[in-house]
Image (tube, rainbow, N blue to C red):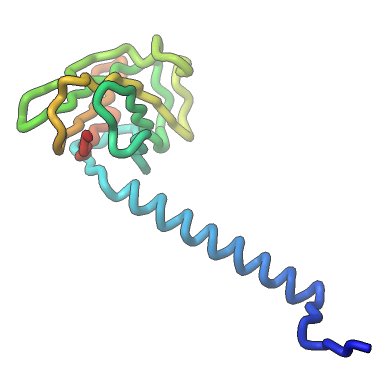
Length: 157
């Protein structure tokens, strides 16, 4: 007969391990979110408080599309908005565009107050030199008032 009491695990200890693992995962997830969110800077604020700027893939790749998600909270409803963004290399704009937010895919106007997410998809030219780029995005309400302005660094490979 085998009397092996040392490998017996109670359902309680297994459950505690699962809770510890889930908690550790959430802490890691929170730290990763803070790390990616801390990279951008505000260059002006209005009705939109930007909490994160997510770039996928990161780093962006020449000749491929990059998606930039602007995530935040809108203090007041807006009837519409325009987005102006530039991606510059050593001060020279490689991409310089203005878009009506209401006509962008997956976005509806009027814009309700509360949770806000805007996805910008842009093709990185295959001829773009590798290196550090400056991103600047400005959102302006249809009344002409600044909603938000953010800047970030992109390392294009």
